Amino acid sequence: MPKLGELNALDRAEFTRIVAPVFEHSPWVAARTESQRPFSSRERLHEALVATVRAASDEEKLCLIRAHPDLIGEGELTAASQTEQASAGLDHASSEEAKQFREYNRQYRERFGFPFVICARLNKKEAIARAFPVRLQNSREQEIEIALQEISKIADLRLRDLVE
Ligand code: GUN
Image (cartoon, rainbow, N blue to C red; front, side, top):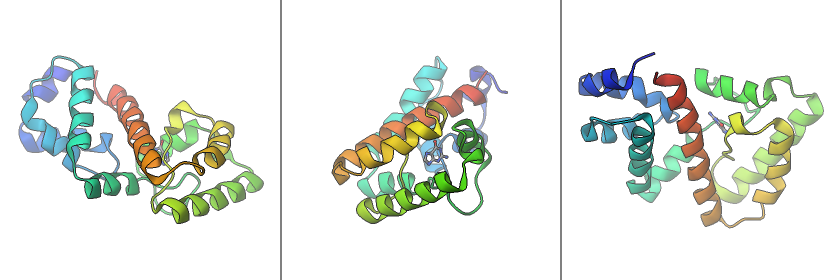
């Protein structure tokens, strides 16, 4: 696990390679933040990464949201996503729960055009199942805002695992 000082001292490409996984399939966030080094704390690095996301175009923000897998979805998961889904208990869902999640995922994608993002490490599967119908009532603008806030929480926890 690198120390913050070590991250500050890496060359650009190495910094980007190591910090990239903090944002799901979106290395551009780390790449655009790299030039602001040195960071005085992990918290400042997190703030700068989140500010990069906020400064991105609407299309880029949507791309970032869309880079997240469905909870109990299909296909390969990144290592971080696998850990996150397991932490919520989603790797041990009953077939009824899995069916319910797939139906919510479908409805959510149909309504908003992007996947449902909630910080899985801060919520158990029961809480996530309760959040779906509530958030399905929101406007698209509200859901984009909530998704970006959840992505900031996901990034904070990934960064805590990454930086000593
Ligand atoms: N999709 C919805 N929530 C999450 C999460 O916490 N992590 C990842 N990787 N994907 C998600």
